[in-house]
Image (tube, rainbow, N blue to C red; front, top):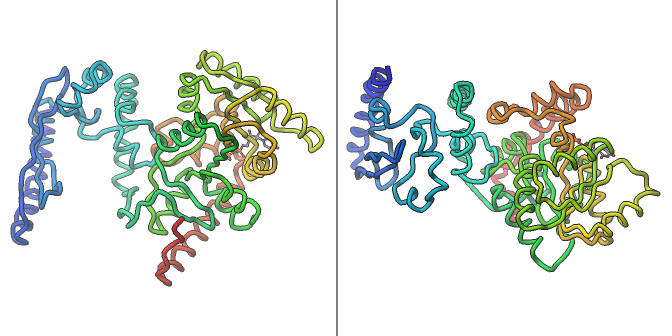
Length: 413
Ligand code: UDP
């Protein structure tokens, strides 16, 4: 079966391959073949060839041949080079239990903009969670990405920061965002502020000047979700990752468990934050939870909350009271807070306490998390996703058209 599929696809794409060679030759381009020795299942090596044109990859020549020969699978981890296998040692062993794939979960994740720690962690997770169901989900994601061409044309610029609707955004990967926070935690200085901006927040920024100014007073504002990614793309900016609080939270907890920095959880209902605290203690026994408090409090109770946070001697404070309330609260109170880092994190306490179900990974890979939230919380989120989100897209399109028309570059930050 494998041989029939492999050789049939090879026969199908052969004319295209030949055509590409002929066109290239006609244009007097320089061809070369780049070959690598890769490690397959159980570390069996094979030679992988890539047709290069002026030292840039044109096409992979023999992937379908390797598929037919059983060295590659349709879906699987990225094949490793031999040097990588040696460097990774035991950490790379898990992924060598399965065949590497032509369609690779980490590439799908990269295309869908979902933040991840590194390629190896995605490949390892794939091996651990491997099932027919998961493979079908990945295949569906691949087909949808192909059909919708979710990546579209590569935007012309990739910058570490840019301005979107008057807010200076940090365009970094999840790994860099975490490193920034970790650096602040290990420094002597206090009161670093971070936030995430999704399409709804960006929409609010357009009408709420105070919110916009608040965000611009923060050290880092990260781009969260498919809405801002599309808006940025229309403005010619390539968003590195979908850096949202919900994906960052488990990674942050893992790191804090190692570094020993203390965390304080402020936000959500009393029962939610209590449940979250219990769950975190079970999942991360080494995590130092300095304290927790509900996000529903009056002006008169504010002083008490600040005293509670300061007496807990926490290093990092997560504020989950919804945007823009949480960011405004951070900026208004930061001078009196003895914390190294404060982050506005939105509704993630609800997810991790188990109070509200988060979209499964395959829904997120299809960039449909918003549809899931709408289905789960139709009354709470109806206005946001059915009215505000389309409105935001219209505003983004208008602004991008205006920018193109005037041929103005967005302000460099
Ligand atoms: N919240 C709060 N205090 C308030 C209003 C809201 O602690 O005065 C909490 C609410 O319980 C929820 C979170 O803030 O846990 C807001 O979640 P939302 O779904 O709005 O966040 P996002 O969609 O931005 O992640």
